[in-house]
Image 1 (cartoon, rainbow, N blue to C red):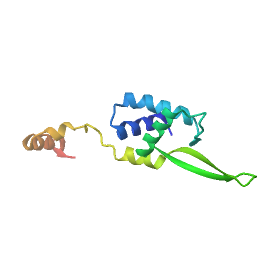
Image 2: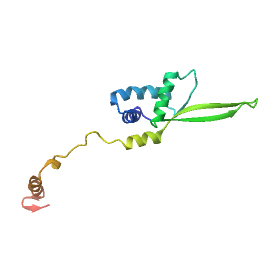
Image 3: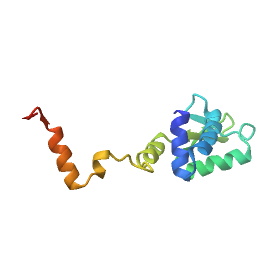
Image 4: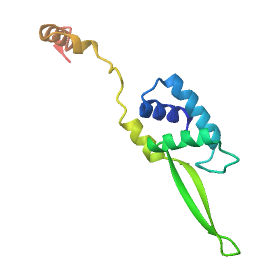
Length: 129
């Protein structure tokens, strides 16, 4: 996952400017580094950051996973993880429509202008190309 992709996903999911989303993306990616998932440990993730992770989960940018382990005494231990939701991010980006589509100069021509320009462009020295 790149910071640019995370920025675009956050920007589109939360409908905010990319400059603001970029700061959030960098902050989130600092937790993950080169990893796809991180363990949610009370000493490593502050409650305010955990709240942000839940918000990102609601927008399908992150997801949660659990693993249950049986310890030697028979006690069960559950590990909670935060995972980058690549599929969710791809859907957010795929559903992104550019805010202003580029318009070709030819799209703005009237029919008469279009026919004139079209005939000029298709003829070279009196011959059709």
